[in-house]
Image 1 (cartoon, one colour):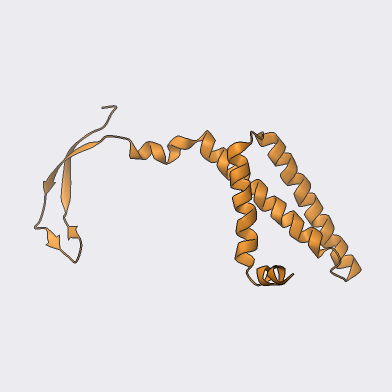
Image 2 (cartoon, rainbow, N blue to C red):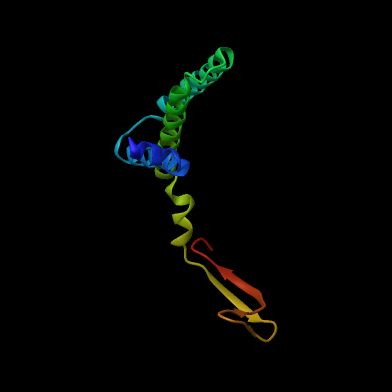
Length: 131
């Protein structure tokens, strides 16, 4: 019981655990996008219902249900993140593997700074994998 009380003091951990669970689930299970959208819609409706019931009753009897809905919603968000990354992998990593060449002329003297060098260039020509 002591560890549960300590976990309540660290809300970041309570949010990261469902996200990691969602990411791992998204990697190893093939869940359709349509099913994930349906689950998200049901969770939003359930979430609104719990909020409405809590407001009417004046007690926080259903706060466990509220936390459960938030956790499931974060798990679904993690699954969606992985699905999108697996569906569109070239959005980020495709930029790294491209080969481009620039022919430039140095306009002024390089300015040496601590750890860097600032150089002003004028691009004369450009070549990539297409042209």
